[in-house]
Amino acid sequence: MLELYLDTDDIEQVKRFTRCLPIKGVTTNPSILAKSAQGLTHTLSQLNTLIGAEARFHVQVVSQTVDEMVNEARQLAALPYDIVVKIPATEIGLAAIKQLKAEKIRILATAIYSVQQGFLAALCGADYLAPYVNRIEAMGSDGVKVVADIQHLLTQYQLSSKLLPASFKNTQQVLEVLKLGVGAITLPVDVTAQLFLHPAVQPAVNQFSQDWHSVFGDKLSFES
Ligand code: E4P
Image 1 (cartoon, rainbow, N blue to C red):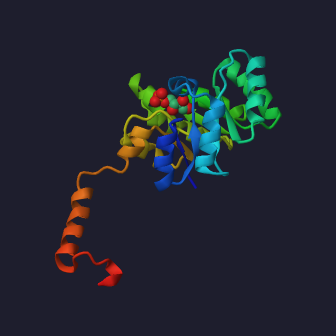
Image 2: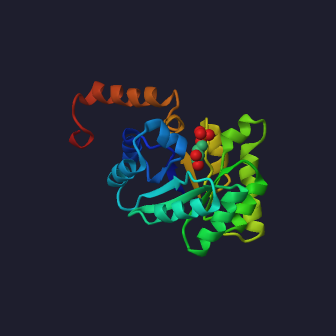
Image 3: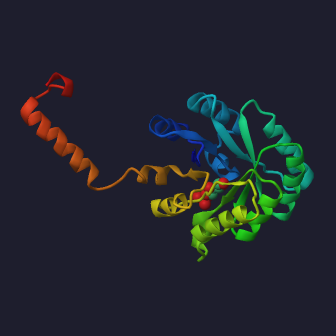
């Protein structure tokens, strides 16, 4: 089963999409949290109430050194929620990931722009890998191919990391990544909303309604 996340800390938007989609949880990053300025404590508490006890949260460390990242990750993992700690897949980040996996703390390796980076994070035991599809494409490379190549290496080397592609600007990128069979994905709210859109849908629904009312008036289906 695909794990579907929203890449936002916007409570109203999470409420909106939790009503109509099987949302597993939320991914955040320091930029998202800084933009809303709500703070992690408030955000997690609100989102957990909203999504429910099964909600999973991917939360990124802001520390810059291995020791500080490890300490921050331990604190995040100790919070009373289902937390996966996000750590950038840099040289320093991978050192932290190695240590944290020895403590069985769940990790998402983030800021993945290359196949090599994703593969090394998987070798270090990261539970999730987040390649940045749109950011890679904005730099002139093929973001979907990066995801596909990481997936190929995971299979080839029997590594258990789950791909959780992130950074999307349009629904086609989302579709191409889903066709690969990734285990998880995180979507920005604007792209999530676009997934429902097709110019033919509302006219079709309106026509059904018009046809019905022209014959049965205000009766409901079971009343006819
Ligand atoms: C997720 O791990 C990333 O923080 C995020 O999806 C990046 O998305 P952006 O490229 O839209 O900022």
